[in-house]
Length: 140
Image (tube, rainbow, N blue to C red; front, side, top):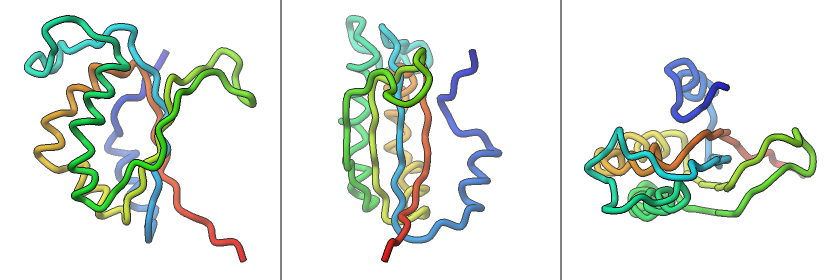
């Protein structure tokens, strides 16, 4: 089973090339590991093992100051589960909506050195994820 944890060069380029203007909302679907895996970031590992969900909350706590600094905000954080409409065998533990004022402010946030220093919490937490950039559609 293929897992999606980071953007690829191709997907990153396609995101930039979409030419989205104005605010964007990032829809995150997140599936957590039962036990966080800090093998890629041992310097961030807690003294005792924690759940993937607990590691993700550490990631959020670390990230929020940099998100706010870049003009972004956490719009929604909610517990997931199985789909009402969708594959019966697919579940997501959490959904998160993050708004940024522009693609440029998102890229500034995503490349901020101090923010990147805490990305090990996210990597330790996640078994799989999806990230869908959204732009508003104006309806008259």
